[in-house]
Length: 130
Length: 126
Image (cartoon, rainbow over all chains, first blue to last red; front, side):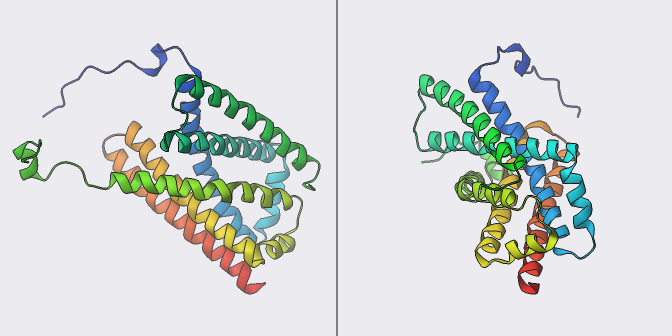
Protein backbone atom coordinates (compact mmCIF):
# COMPACT_ATOMS: atom_id res chain seq x y z
CA UNK A 1 0.00 0.00 0.00
CA UNK A 2 1.39 3.37 -1.02
CA UNK A 3 1.86 5.78 1.87
CA UNK A 4 -0.74 8.56 1.88
CA UNK A 5 0.73 12.03 1.53
CA UNK A 6 0.36 13.65 4.94
CA UNK A 7 0.44 17.40 5.52
CA UNK A 8 3.92 18.60 6.42
CA UNK A 9 4.76 20.93 9.27
CA UNK A 10 6.10 24.35 8.24
CA UNK A 11 9.67 24.24 7.01
CA UNK A 12 12.63 26.00 8.57
CA UNK A 13 12.73 28.77 5.96
CA UNK A 14 9.31 30.23 6.84
CA UNK A 15 10.59 31.28 10.25
CA UNK A 16 12.62 34.39 10.98
CA UNK A 17 16.14 33.30 12.03
CA UNK A 18 16.73 33.92 15.73
CA UNK A 19 19.94 33.66 17.74
CA UNK A 20 18.55 30.53 19.44
CA UNK A 21 17.53 28.68 16.28
CA UNK A 22 20.61 29.77 14.32
CA UNK A 23 23.02 28.56 17.01
CA UNK A 24 21.11 25.30 17.30
CA UNK A 25 21.48 24.64 13.56
CA UNK A 26 25.17 25.62 13.68
CA UNK A 27 25.65 23.21 16.61
CA UNK A 28 24.37 20.34 14.49
CA UNK A 29 26.32 21.40 11.39
CA UNK A 30 29.58 21.75 13.34
CA UNK A 31 28.88 18.35 14.92
CA UNK A 32 28.82 16.79 11.45
CA UNK A 33 32.01 18.67 10.46
CA UNK A 34 33.74 17.46 13.66
CA UNK A 35 32.62 13.89 12.95
CA UNK A 36 34.30 14.07 9.52
CA UNK A 37 37.34 15.63 11.21
CA UNK A 38 37.51 12.67 13.62
CA UNK A 39 37.96 10.31 10.66
CA UNK A 40 40.72 12.56 9.28
CA UNK A 41 42.54 12.65 12.65
CA UNK A 42 42.39 8.83 12.74
CA UNK A 43 43.82 8.72 9.19
CA UNK A 44 46.59 11.13 10.21
CA UNK A 45 47.49 8.90 13.19
CA UNK A 46 47.85 5.91 10.87
CA UNK A 47 50.18 7.94 8.61
CA UNK A 48 52.24 9.01 11.64
CA UNK A 49 52.57 5.38 12.78
CA UNK A 50 53.37 3.88 9.37
CA UNK A 51 56.72 3.91 7.59
CA UNK A 52 55.06 4.32 4.20
CA UNK A 53 56.23 7.88 3.59
CA UNK A 54 52.66 9.16 3.56
CA UNK A 55 53.47 11.43 6.51
CA UNK A 56 55.47 13.81 4.26
CA UNK A 57 52.60 13.81 1.76
CA UNK A 58 50.23 14.56 4.64
CA UNK A 59 52.45 17.43 5.83
CA UNK A 60 52.51 18.92 2.32
CA UNK A 61 48.71 18.94 2.18
CA UNK A 62 48.33 20.35 5.71
CA UNK A 63 50.83 23.17 5.08
CA UNK A 64 49.26 24.21 1.75
CA UNK A 65 46.68 27.00 1.68
CA UNK A 66 43.74 24.59 1.28
CA UNK A 67 45.12 22.36 4.03
CA UNK A 68 45.34 25.37 6.34
CA UNK A 69 41.83 26.43 5.32
CA UNK A 70 40.49 22.93 6.17
CA UNK A 71 42.34 22.99 9.52
CA UNK A 72 40.96 26.46 10.22
CA UNK A 73 37.40 25.26 9.49
CA UNK A 74 37.90 22.14 11.64
CA UNK A 75 39.36 24.12 14.57
CA UNK A 76 36.62 26.79 14.42
CA UNK A 77 33.98 24.05 14.23
CA UNK A 78 35.55 22.16 17.15
CA UNK A 79 35.79 25.29 19.33
CA UNK A 80 32.23 26.41 18.59
CA UNK A 81 30.75 22.94 19.22
CA UNK A 82 32.75 22.66 22.46
CA UNK A 83 31.60 26.04 23.81
CA UNK A 84 27.98 25.61 22.74
CA UNK A 85 28.16 22.08 24.16
CA UNK A 86 28.86 23.60 27.60
CA UNK A 87 25.63 25.59 27.13
CA UNK A 88 23.76 22.38 26.34
CA UNK A 89 25.21 20.58 29.38
CA UNK A 90 24.19 23.50 31.63
CA UNK A 91 20.65 23.32 30.24
CA UNK A 92 20.68 19.58 31.01
CA UNK A 93 21.24 20.34 34.70
CA UNK A 94 18.55 23.01 34.55
CA UNK A 95 20.72 26.13 34.48
CA UNK A 96 20.16 29.11 32.19
CA UNK A 97 16.85 28.10 30.68
CA UNK A 98 15.32 31.61 30.95
CA UNK A 99 14.87 33.26 27.57
CA UNK A 100 17.04 36.27 28.41
CA UNK A 101 19.86 34.01 29.67
CA UNK A 102 19.63 31.73 26.63
CA UNK A 103 20.06 34.75 24.34
CA UNK A 104 22.93 36.18 26.45
CA UNK A 105 24.87 32.88 26.62
CA UNK A 106 24.25 32.45 22.88
CA UNK A 107 26.00 35.70 22.00
CA UNK A 108 28.71 34.90 24.57
CA UNK A 109 29.42 31.60 22.78
CA UNK A 110 29.73 33.38 19.41
CA UNK A 111 32.08 35.96 20.95
CA UNK A 112 34.25 33.38 22.75
CA UNK A 113 34.37 31.02 19.75
CA UNK A 114 35.53 33.84 17.47
CA UNK A 115 38.08 35.07 20.01
CA UNK A 116 39.53 31.65 20.84
CA UNK A 117 39.73 30.60 17.17
CA UNK A 118 41.52 33.87 16.43
CA UNK A 119 43.92 33.35 19.33
CA UNK A 120 44.58 29.75 18.27
CA UNK A 121 45.52 30.81 14.74
CA UNK A 122 47.59 33.73 15.97
CA UNK A 123 49.66 31.20 17.93
CA UNK A 124 49.60 28.57 15.16
CA UNK A 125 50.76 30.95 12.41
CA UNK A 126 53.59 32.19 14.63
CA UNK A 127 54.91 28.63 14.49
CA UNK A 128 53.13 26.99 17.40
CA UNK A 129 55.43 28.23 20.18
CA UNK A 130 53.32 29.30 23.13
CA UNK B 1 -2.40 -0.08 36.36
CA UNK B 2 -3.23 -1.50 32.99
CA UNK B 3 -1.10 1.03 31.12
CA UNK B 4 -1.98 3.36 28.29
CA UNK B 5 -0.67 1.28 25.41
CA UNK B 6 -2.89 -0.12 22.69
CA UNK B 7 -3.28 -3.91 23.26
CA UNK B 8 -2.53 -4.48 19.57
CA UNK B 9 0.75 -2.56 19.92
CA UNK B 10 1.67 -4.76 22.91
CA UNK B 11 0.81 -7.91 20.93
CA UNK B 12 2.97 -6.77 18.01
CA UNK B 13 5.80 -5.86 20.36
CA UNK B 14 5.88 -2.28 19.12
CA UNK B 15 7.05 0.66 21.18
CA UNK B 16 10.21 1.88 22.83
CA UNK B 17 13.32 -0.27 22.46
CA UNK B 18 14.35 1.10 25.91
CA UNK B 19 17.60 2.25 24.31
CA UNK B 20 16.94 6.00 24.30
CA UNK B 21 18.10 6.82 27.82
CA UNK B 22 21.45 5.10 27.31
CA UNK B 23 21.99 6.98 24.02
CA UNK B 24 21.16 10.32 25.67
CA UNK B 25 23.33 9.59 28.73
CA UNK B 26 26.39 8.36 26.81
CA UNK B 27 26.21 11.43 24.58
CA UNK B 28 26.53 13.56 27.76
CA UNK B 29 29.19 11.40 29.39
CA UNK B 30 31.37 11.51 26.25
CA UNK B 31 30.67 15.27 26.00
CA UNK B 32 32.03 15.83 29.53
CA UNK B 33 35.11 13.74 28.69
CA UNK B 34 35.65 15.77 25.49
CA UNK B 35 35.34 19.01 27.45
CA UNK B 36 38.75 18.13 28.93
CA UNK B 37 40.24 16.02 26.12
CA UNK B 38 39.45 18.27 23.12
CA UNK B 39 41.21 21.41 24.50
CA UNK B 40 44.18 19.18 25.40
CA UNK B 41 44.20 17.79 21.83
CA UNK B 42 44.15 21.29 20.32
CA UNK B 43 47.07 22.27 22.59
CA UNK B 44 48.93 19.05 21.66
CA UNK B 45 48.30 19.57 17.93
CA UNK B 46 49.55 23.17 18.06
CA UNK B 47 52.70 22.02 19.87
CA UNK B 48 53.40 19.66 16.92
CA UNK B 49 53.26 22.32 14.19
CA UNK B 50 56.22 21.92 11.87
CA UNK B 51 57.49 18.79 13.64
CA UNK B 52 58.93 15.92 11.59
CA UNK B 53 57.57 12.36 11.81
CA UNK B 54 60.06 11.25 14.49
CA UNK B 55 59.34 14.22 16.77
CA UNK B 56 55.59 13.59 16.42
CA UNK B 57 56.11 9.91 17.26
CA UNK B 58 58.28 10.81 20.25
CA UNK B 59 55.57 13.17 21.54
CA UNK B 60 52.82 10.55 21.11
CA UNK B 61 55.01 7.86 22.70
CA UNK B 62 55.02 9.82 25.97
CA UNK B 63 52.76 7.65 28.21
CA UNK B 64 50.60 10.57 29.39
CA UNK B 65 50.10 11.88 25.84
CA UNK B 66 49.39 8.37 24.55
CA UNK B 67 46.77 7.80 27.26
CA UNK B 68 45.08 11.14 26.60
CA UNK B 69 45.18 10.62 22.81
CA UNK B 70 43.62 7.14 23.03
CA UNK B 71 40.95 8.50 25.39
CA UNK B 72 40.31 11.44 23.06
CA UNK B 73 39.92 9.26 19.97
CA UNK B 74 37.56 6.81 21.73
CA UNK B 75 35.43 9.60 23.23
CA UNK B 76 35.29 11.54 19.95
CA UNK B 77 34.43 8.51 17.79
CA UNK B 78 31.76 7.44 20.27
CA UNK B 79 30.29 10.95 20.53
CA UNK B 80 30.38 11.38 16.73
CA UNK B 81 28.66 8.04 16.17
CA UNK B 82 25.84 8.92 18.60
CA UNK B 83 25.40 12.38 17.08
CA UNK B 84 25.43 11.27 13.45
CA UNK B 85 22.88 8.57 14.30
CA UNK B 86 20.38 11.27 15.34
CA UNK B 87 21.14 13.43 12.28
CA UNK B 88 20.47 10.46 9.98
CA UNK B 89 17.28 9.56 11.90
CA UNK B 90 16.03 13.10 11.29
CA UNK B 91 16.83 13.59 7.61
CA UNK B 92 17.29 10.23 5.89
CA UNK B 93 14.50 7.71 5.38
CA UNK B 94 13.90 4.33 3.75
CA UNK B 95 16.68 1.88 2.88
CA UNK B 96 19.24 4.71 2.78
CA UNK B 97 18.58 5.31 6.48
CA UNK B 98 19.49 1.87 7.77
CA UNK B 99 22.34 1.51 5.27
CA UNK B 100 23.84 4.80 6.54
CA UNK B 101 23.23 3.86 10.18
CA UNK B 102 25.21 0.64 9.76
CA UNK B 103 27.92 2.42 7.74
CA UNK B 104 28.32 5.05 10.50
CA UNK B 105 28.61 2.38 13.22
CA UNK B 106 31.29 0.55 11.21
CA UNK B 107 33.18 3.71 10.20
CA UNK B 108 33.53 5.01 13.76
CA UNK B 109 34.32 1.62 15.25
CA UNK B 110 37.09 1.21 12.65
CA UNK B 111 38.35 4.78 13.18
CA UNK B 112 38.64 4.17 16.94
CA UNK B 113 40.30 0.76 16.51
CA UNK B 114 42.73 2.09 13.86
CA UNK B 115 43.66 5.03 16.12
CA UNK B 116 44.39 2.70 19.04
CA UNK B 117 46.51 0.42 16.86
CA UNK B 118 48.40 3.40 15.38
CA UNK B 119 49.09 4.90 18.81
CA UNK B 120 50.00 1.43 20.14
CA UNK B 121 52.52 0.92 17.35
CA UNK B 122 54.09 4.31 18.07
CA UNK B 123 54.26 3.66 21.83
CA UNK B 124 55.59 0.11 21.64
CA UNK B 125 58.16 0.76 18.88
CA UNK B 126 59.51 4.01 20.31
